[in-house]
Length: 631
Image (cartoon, rainbow, N blue to C red):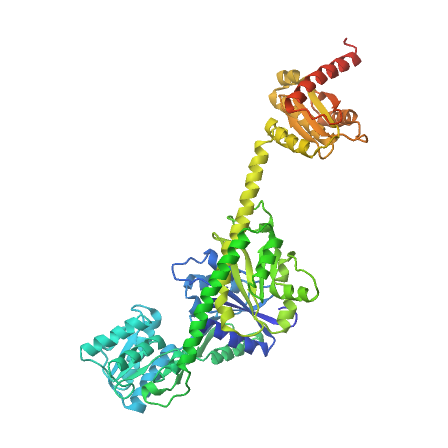
């Protein structure tokens, strides 16, 4: 629950299919009249049975959380994949959430059963009882398909009730599509077996059969009646209009609302609720048209949608190219807004993937932070204030920006996962203020583009990070972490380019007694002494110093000299004294320090620095021996 609203999570697939988004629109309207609010979790690709339940494209179904979700609806008929549905249901039941399954039946759920077969029975009954037809032929879907087989069984049952003998020759298969259905009707015509009525398993096949018959001079319905199933718009624009049947989306929504109200009131969480289809009578069976749609209007709409689809694909391709060339996330947010990607959309990335050092090809399970890369509504709001939107971080517990506003407005939130090479990088949230079919059609286009564009951008950042790391490692001494000779020369050249006439401070360091430590205590302790001296050198020099190990125990630091520079030699010795006091080692780490200040404008190269180091080290060691009274 969020505030005063009960959150209902709907798991579905292919939201861009008309049947799916129209159902969601009807359900959300019904919910907005109550204290229910709809969160839709959508997978755009088709989830065939061979898709595994842990496939990356199903990761969106793991986003619901018992901390804010009150019930889960699994649109099992649209999802189709049994294993995926079972995984969602088991997760929800483990969270003690009530679950409603739409279409398929599962244990532990309230199963809303779609009694599609009853529609076929009712159609056959109508044709026989109202129009006196006894000669039937069914054009089923795909052979072996469960939906098709159930409709064939209903066809048989309806015939048996009227004492009409059934045989296998009374069924053809049209694969749920137009051309195979027309071919099936043509075969019967050629064989002289044309029936008095075609009962088709869906509307696409019914329209195709009707068109074919009329093309051969056969009148529908005078010579042959034709019926379909699904109540698509095409049956109302066909000539004649096609009799069909369907389970009304409004009826399903009412059953869902009633079921949820019962559950929240303490009712049962298991059982079966049946939803029955209704016949829509039209001219193809001999009845009057229930309604008509203008075919030219529908054709124009379909053409416009197709042209829009093509144009948007071109635009999205150009946007993808610009995103992958973006310099940073702020740049990408500007590109997405400028290209008018989607006005009512948020793009949210897992916080860890904004770190260039995190590999986007490996699934991350850490952190709950979210990076808001794009928020269409907030961008527009900022514009009215004369401000510019900038990406920002938010807690994953907040789900989406402006959550309370969207809930109060009764908006349905639609989530899709951002996947790149099998890894979930984040998610998109669409929250349309009104119904427009084109918005839903654009969801898979937008999601697919951002999957590739953002994934490619994040991957490029990671590769750039690796290249920098390799470059850094190749120029770094492994033991001390200081630059090696190659790394030092690169950084020193950069320093000289920036330097004007300022003098440089050159610090030389050479360990004392390293041979004794190696011979007496082993090379591991010798390495420890070198590492300690390097740490001391780096610690006492300014942060902009370039420190290098260019020999076994020879180290050097170079930095722009300023008169207020602290006495490096004293600080260095104090560092080693503190280390020796607490190390517990049977030896002391000591080193000689030489300091050289260049003249104004002097820019010695590396070899000159090394030569000066030899002189400085000789003088320093001589000074230290003199101080100890050995000379």
